[in-house]
Each structure stands twice: as structure tokens, then as C-alpha cells.
Image 1 (tube, rainbow, N blue to C red):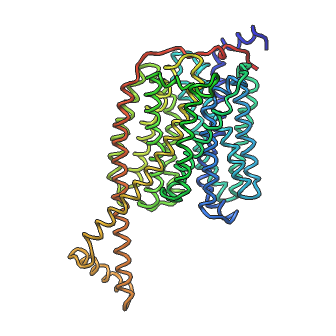
Image 2 (cartoon, rainbow, N blue to C red):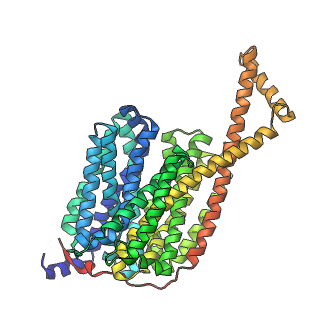
Image 3 (tube, rainbow, N blue to C red):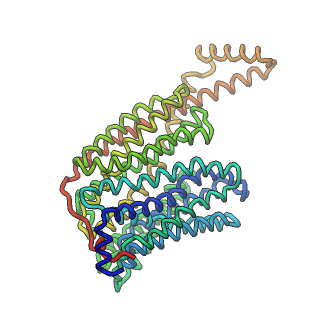
Length: 524
């Protein structure tokens, strides 16, 4: 297209909606990698004949690769252009997903998943930047919220169609789900997205890239595998020992190099720094909630995987609908207001959830999940908008990538910390309950007598009655300790929401117009 034609297309009021549709289809494609795979893990273990420790690399490799690439979005986008970066990233996601369906062994599947993460990291950030640029300043909250539609549709397809394909056909079929929306997004992107040529830099910060990748990869590996290998194991200690010095060397390199891969000066901006801190706490909450909810529904309420998915599904669908609503709200009022309301709502819901026990109904849990997703919509979209509008025009792309890294690290750290605290509190409560209800106590004797009577009526005879009664009592004590541990962790998460109010209040309300010149460049 000529420059005159470009101006005409960009001024077309429908153009931004075509761009939004393109990015939404890309979000649907990317979301398959994060939702369907958890359901397919048992089938893949059986297919390849491997243990859980080995199959976990299918998830870990994707998470690490995705997060490591996020901070390079600003540099890559300036080097190859935003449209080309979007196309290359989406091509990586779609191609590696199809190859994952054809994987011949576990090693090849892990490699394809790493490639998928390499594409997903930049794709997640650059899609948001493209949307942000194409919408006018008074609709940029809406632009951020539109991405939730893609994630919601992707989650729905993952839980329903993906689960059906895995159960009745093969786990390989779910890898091919990414192909149709991915191909459509690729075609639309080539035809619609503005073709900014990029500004190639003469210098590449190779050392910065090396130490940043080394730091992030070892840190994320330690956080995601600490519970499995043990936090005091030599493997986890070695990972932390590499991550720490690598981070310090990376900071020194970025401070003194002429063309840094990341401009650390962005964190001199108090509004951006506080928004990033609040985003980190928000990500910790989201991932911890997802981790705890799955365990609570299955281990405490006794639901199976399909029933658990059906409890979570309504909240995921509503999240997609409410994403644009939360974005529009942040355009109409001071975006700090919905964020503060969202964090306060999350605190109240976590507190209410801390009363959950074996008698909690499925309906109650479904309503709590819906409430949490509504609160998260009030937080995520306005908070992202505040972080982006706090930056100058040329900093938005890099700032979006950095916020993605902060969220990724916060999510991994949240799950790791939640798991550790859950295990510690379970052990403490179990020990306390054993002391209070030892076999010589009056309560324990009364319970045991009742259990023995039930067993006798059921046909048990001889020494087996005593063995089964003691076994039942131990299981009940363990279950009570588990419920108490869940309640403790949920209370801590409620306090975390209260703590997130502090950085939110410190975000200044001043707004810049972060529309780079690339938004006015030539479409392809």
C-alpha cells in the first residue's frame, strides 16, 4: 500500500476492530498451550511411559522459554518491526503446536514445547502493544480488555472440546486445535497489521541477552521444580546460586552498555514501578488461586477432573465478557478506583473461601470463582493500562514485555510459596491434632467405639476391626489437617490483597499519550 492508502485505512473507524479481531484469534491460539495441557498430562505419561517428574518438563520448558523472551519484546520489535515480530511469534506457536502433536518421544515433545514458549512470550506482549496503539487514548482500557475475550474463548475450548478430544481420541488431537485460529490470525495479520519496518541497531547486547536468559531460566526452573526436588536439594541450590550472580552481572552490563537489551531507567518511573509491583502481587494471587482451587475441589470436595473443570468454566467465560467492561470502566473513571475495589473484593473472597471445608457446596465454590474472576477483571485491565500510560511513546513496547516478566516470575513464585506454606501448615496441624486426639483421649475413644460398631455391622470381624478403625481415624485426622492448612494459606492470600493496595495508591494518575510513530506507519 502507498502512504496515502495507509492513512486512509488507519483513519477508517472499523480498522481498529479488524486489528482487535486479529489479536483475539492470536490470543485464542496461544491460550491452548496453557490450559489444555494440564488435562492431557496423564494421557501423555501413559503414551510415553514416563513418570510425573519427567513429563513436568513439558510444562516447565514452555513457561521458562515464554518468560525469558518477554523482556526482549522492545528490542526485537524495534529490530524487525512489530508486525513481523507478531507474525514470526505466531508462526512459532502454530508450527510448534502442530509438531508437538506429531512428537515421537518425550524429548521431541519438550523441544517443540520450548519452541512454542519462544513464540508465546513475544506474541503475548506485542499483541497487546499493537492493540494499544490502534485505539485512541480514551479507548485504551477497552483495548487491553479485549484480549480477555481471546483468553476466555481459548479456555472454554480447552476445557470442553480439548477435554473431549483427549478422552475419546488422543492427547495429540489437542495440539492441532491451535492450527485453525492460528492460521486465520496469520492471514489477517499479513493483510491488516501496519507494516512498520523496524529500526535495526548496529549493536546487539549479546552479553546482556546471555546473562538475562541465564538468570531468568535458572530462577524459574528453581521456582517451578523446588517442591518436587526439595528446596534444600543440591540441584535447586545450584540453580539459585547461578541465578543470583547472573542477575547482578546483567544489571552491571545494562547500566554501562551503549545499546542495552533492557533500559533499566524505566524503573525510575515511580508510576510504572508501582504498577509493576502491584501486577506481580496480582499474578501471585491468580496463580496461587488456580493452584489451590484445583487441589481444594479434588482433595477436599472429592470432585474429579471433569467436575473441577465445570466448576471453573463459568468464571472463565464470564471473565472474557467482563474484560472489555473493566477496560471501558478504566477509560471512564480514574483506573485506580476499579483496581482498589478489585483488590478489596479479592481480599474478601479469599477470606470467605478460607471457611471452605468438606461440607462446602459446589454452588458456593462456583459463585466464589465467579466473584474472583470479576474482581480480577477490575484489577488486571486497569492496572495494565496504568502501567502503559505512565511511559513515554517509545517505551511502551519494552514496558509491556517487562511487565510480562514480572507477572511470570510472580506467578511462579506464588505457586512455589503457596505449595511450601501448605505443606508446612499441614504438618503442623497434623501434629497438633494427633496430640489432641491421641488414642487414649476421651474423644478418640468415643469416636473409635462408634467406628468399631459401624464396622461390626458391616461384617468386619476379629483384629481387622481394630486395624480398620485406627486407619480411618488417621485418615480423618490427616483430612482435618489438610483443610486447616488450606484455610491458613487462603487467609495469607487475603492479606496479600490488602498489601497490594499500597503500591496501587502510590501510582500517580498522570497520563501520557504513548502512541509511537509505528502506529502511523505503513500497513502490509
